[in-house]
Every structure is written in C-alpha cells, then in structure tokens.
Image (cartoon, rainbow, N blue to C red; front, top):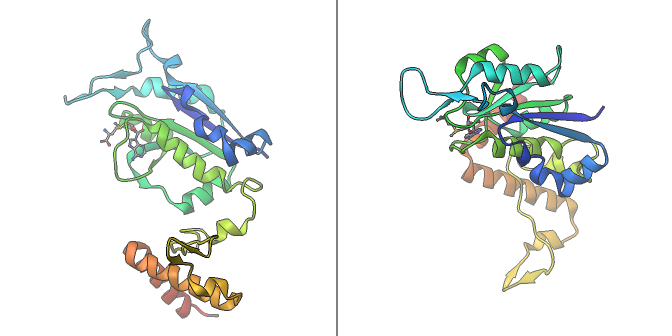
Length: 240
Ligand code: SAM
C-alpha cells in the first residue's frame, strides 16, 4: 500500500519542496509515497478567511483558532483514518529515529503545521494530535519541521533507500552514533586513511568501527551513551 502524507498548512506551496527531489522524489515518481497539502485558510472565517485571533489573557502574537483547525482536519481526515495525527510544535516530545521507524512502518501521517504563536490548546487536545518537536529551537512555522520529519520517514520506506543495511548501520539505529567514513584517495593533504580500513581484515575493520562509534557517542552524546550502557547491562541480566 502507498504511504500517504497529508499536510495542513497556511503555505501548501512549500510542499513537497525538497521532497520532490533526489531519493524521495524518485520514490514518489515510482509511486512509493504520495502527499497532499491543503491550505488551512480555505476553512478561514468571513470575507478575509481569518484563521487566527488574539490570545485570551493578553500577550504578544496571534493564536490559530480551534474551530478553523477542526473544520480543516474534518475536511481532509476521513472517519477512521488510521494515520497518526501530528502537531509540530516546540512544546512537543523530541522527534527521534525510533519515531521515524514507527511512522514509516505505518500507513502514513497527517501533519498540522502551526504559525504565529501556534494552535489553541483545545484543538490539540480534542483532536488527539501527538505533539512533536524537531529540536530545542523555535522556527517561524511548522512547515520546515514537517519536511524534516517526512524526510526521515520517507527514506525508511521499503524500496526508497538502496541497500537496507545502510539504514541498519546508521547513527541512532543501534543506539550509537555512526563510525567515521573514508574514501579515495588513501592519503589526502598529508592525512592518511586509518590503516585498518586498508587491511582487508573484515573482523578488525568491524571492531575498529564499533570502537569508533562507541567513543564518538560517549564523547558527543552522553545521553545516548548512558542509554546504551543501561541497555547493555539489562541485556546481560535478562535470561537467555
Ligand atoms: N509560541 C510557540 C512557543 O513558544 O512554543 C512558538 C510558535 S512558532 C513561532 C510557530 C509554529 O512553528 C509552531 O506552532 C509550530 O508549528 C512550528 N515550530 C516552531 N518550532 C518548532 C520546532 N522546534 N519543532 C516543531 N515545530 C516547530
């Protein structure tokens, strides 16, 4: 079945954007995934198709109205749609490779992109949307976040990436950052490639890569390293 993404946004012209090129673009041409993006303003109120209003309690900025968002969702989400509904927001849980794997193995996604100060809290709760952030920084809109999330999912769809083993060895797949890569020339600008990679000894290469992945993770991402260690310990303790 074709993996299908629906995006609700004030800027549908931003889609598919970069996802129409390269790996994801070719996969779309091959019919492995589809995307439709809809303008929330089409469900806006009055002659000016208003989608936002001032915040109750005062404060800066505008808030996207729950009635408008609700109508937009209803117009593009059939009853019983099995696809997760996601609201992209800096207040959400941090997006991870495990999320990408979960979403890619499902039927697709429906994504809500906020603008201004974001969505009225009541529509987030009433719609049951999962709140996801792509990082600890604030973007001006959910569209770039939706493109990032979709890119991470699309490359995991069966048939999109050549060589499934490249996904298995990548950063995060085994809980570690990936080892460093080298290609020709064997020496460049006075910098030789690590000799073990030229040795032809696959066992030694594999051990070297593992050690590099562990060292890099320990030094750069203590959070991932701690999780890796605790998985290793609980793995040892679990009955065989
Ligand atoms: N007032 C919000 C706050 O402080 O949490 C920020 C609103 S932001 C200017 C407008 C929209 O951009 C948000 O509704 C959300 O859809 C999107 N956005 C901004 N940063 C994001 C992030 N790190 N991850 C996902 N979406 C983000």
